Length: 189
Image (tube, rainbow, N blue to C red; front, side, top):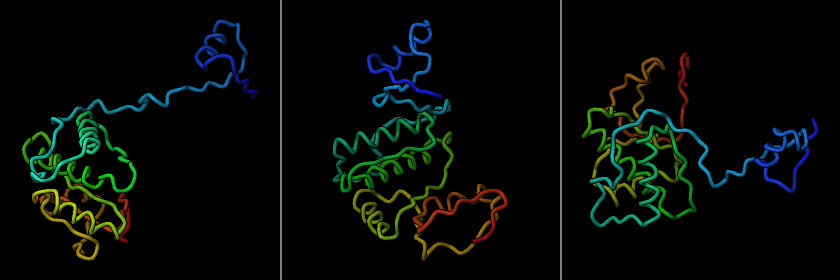
């Protein structure tokens, strides 16, 4: 299949010419959408109002870009998104933004019975675990309950079919060394 680029027109104009029968028959269509959001979000809207978590210490002040990142994460969660990618240069406060979002979500789970309590998992290189713990102690009041790192994780294992029935109050948050993907019929490592 030959693709004929159209240098004198946008891809939308080229497509319109083709539909009218006045343009080239084979056209590579390139959407100029790098400034648009072209992803879809779930129709399942969740309760919540964006804002700083109550457990953020008084002396902890989010910088404007951190506040914007936190509110973006909160709005995505409320709109039903199943995930987000928070990316920035090193040293600009992504850890604090994530911890603040997790604290906001924990407070929401504790205060609204429409939001079921679920565990949270931080997947990070081992060398960063201490940084996460320090940031937590520095900027937040105790809000997460139990945290574990790989050496102190309980050795009890559960069949894959029982993962969703684990008592969420027992292990709300885990710091771990690696992520294990569990699926039906998975084997014990």
